Image 1 (tube, helix red, strand yellow):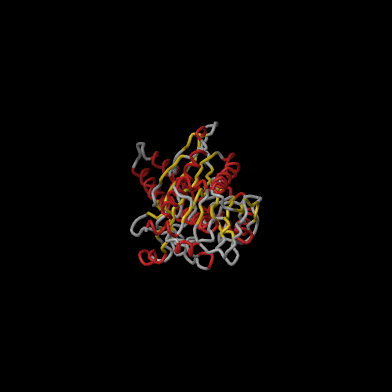
Image 2 (cartoon, helix red, strand yellow; image 1 turned 90 degrees about the vertical axis):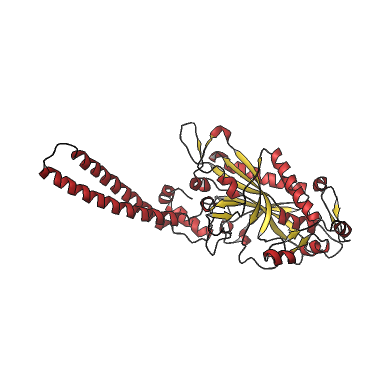
Length: 431
């Protein structure tokens, strides 16, 4: 959530940013409600002061004819204050509703464009593999090696759910440990978070917890939601707290399941594991000083690159354009892995993202730090995907497939799995 005074004082810039983000929001309406709210507060303060003064006058020894008009004035002030409080409450509610629609400001260097086609490639690493055979996609590989069962997943839990089997189970566990080991070496505190969060925590991160356009599963009859990312539970960990400046940055590495409705997600690029309703993810979350957040974003990207270089997966870094930024993000970079089975000749597919959300989330969640002047400004928050298992499995199976149908594993991962390749014979032995 943006600072309301900032919106009022910079309404033209906020209006332009809303246009660049291609979202539906009305900064001018926010300013109108903000001014109305402030005027009502002034009137309330004035009337409460008059009520207190009237009450003070009634404390003395007064004749009946002197007390009667004071009693009448007290009743009038009480009714007027009640009416003003009601109007203030209604205006405050409208103000909050409209303010929450306004996205974070965008970094001046973010590409200005409407959708993902406007994202800017910054650099690449590694070479996409060249095959002497027609490569298969991960769905074909997973079925041939008895690693993934989409059909039974759909029968038991519905479309976009799946079972991992045999070596794929060990792969998931190994990927999680590989990522966690890397993050612990980078100074992150490992955590396993709840798979649910209160709606107020989800909304505090800038996400809509309910409604037809929400990507989040609400838990019926409660104020809980299944989390779409551990960003919610990691960010919520410090909600309402004042963090000592000398302890910043605080860096968490959170393991959780992620649940996403993925409504409307269809098409050839969404098949198999690419868009699913449940997956395992290791998420990075950082609370830091405002002066450090831009450098911290670069560091998160560096950690993500280190992870995927270790896995020998070719990738590219993408600077996300304004129209493709999530509401809380000030700036966002994606890592897209090369996926040989995507499209006719292979395509890049998003595998991680990292975002600097400045104080947008901290303001709503009430996360501050104590500065040297004794004030409590808001911290900046950042998040980044260390490793999303489902999409990493796509990249591993498709990039390391071999002519005989087996899949070679990168050396860094083989040390965790205990095997160097996955073959049909190996899968059959574990069935």
